[in-house]
Image (cartoon, rainbow, N blue to C red; front, side):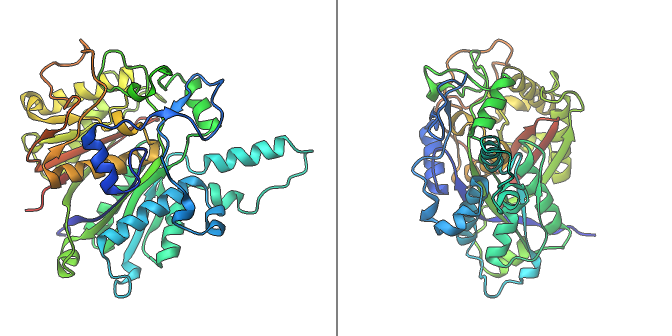
Amino acid sequence: MELKRVVVTGLGALTPIGNTVEEYWNALLAGKSGAAPVTHFDAGKFKTKFACELKNFEVTDFMNRKDARKMDKFSQYAMVASDEAIANSKLDLDTVNKLRVGVIWGAGIGGLETFQEEMINFANGDGTPRFNPFFIPKMISDIAPGNISIKYGFMGPNYTTVSACASSANAMIDALNYIRLGHCDVIVTGGSEAAVTIAGMGGFNAMHAMSTRNDDPQSASRPFDATRDGFVLGEGAGAIVLEEYEHAKARGAKIYAEVAGGGLSSDAYHMTAPHPDGIGVVAVMKNCLENAGMQPEDVDHINTHGTSTPLGDVAELKAITEIFGAHAKNININSTKSMTGHLLGAAGAVEAIASILAIEHGIVPPTINHSTVDENIDPSLNLTLNKPQKRDVKVALSNTFGFGGHNACVLFKKLN
């Protein structure tokens, strides 16, 4: 069976450094940090008192208050980003066969704030179960793609992938395969997360996973730097419209890039820590390249998982050196989490958009906040430090990994 070609025809982004794709991209090139003191709740007694929250975002600018109250923030964010992506794709909603349009979304946690609020209200009451009738529909992770499909009438595959921080990359790979196999013409994919909450911040602090650089939040996310001390929690959403190539061509759609392949693997090692030798990461990049029918020498750019954790950054770069060998020094490697923070289940989608735009514009965003060389990192690697670098990017990889050992890698290439 000959596989269909799959292309990107729409993008949508809602991030801590920009509330549209254009704002997000411009902020990436400017090296803008999205980290600032937490405003969603009083974090005065928390170990970490800052996060990468959305800025100047009012959900009622995008939907009426009644509809917004029926959704957790993670679902609101999904709606806003997908609206932008669908509009950007210029898909004709009156003529497209909606039975062949799906929504496959990613969320690592889902409606955490909704769950938190309902439990706090119950605990503070007299024991009488007075729960919001929208409690369960707001909380469940699969409701985001459900809401998107209900709004637009898309009747193809509709579900959420949950693989921690690899969730939206998993969703993109599933979407890729559904279209490749001829089951769909178009799929809206991506991911969203809204975990900057009491429970989210408290839980990650208890794991010692997050930076505690409270005296200088803007420089706290510092992937590959010797003084890194953990990730910075972020929130938001990324949405991507994937489309079968001939379908896109027939309607004259703008094509950003081709999705050439995707790879999955497991570390099979530890609940939260990466394998120190990066063997699962080696496997996922190898799987992705083989799936795309490409060689390591073809790759120009890698948007790493690069969370700014002491163990994870080193393990990923070791894996890159093992897979790409001498060619590794010719690749523009970066971590856009240095600017956005870690969007958990939305990270894969938001970073895929950065990779796609690097291909389109011929420039790689920087890894900011780097000042101290880590002796455990190969100095010959080009980590695109502190300033963007112009580059004719023909092929870009985007890596995303999650607690539980989940690894996902997606390969994008310039359309031939």
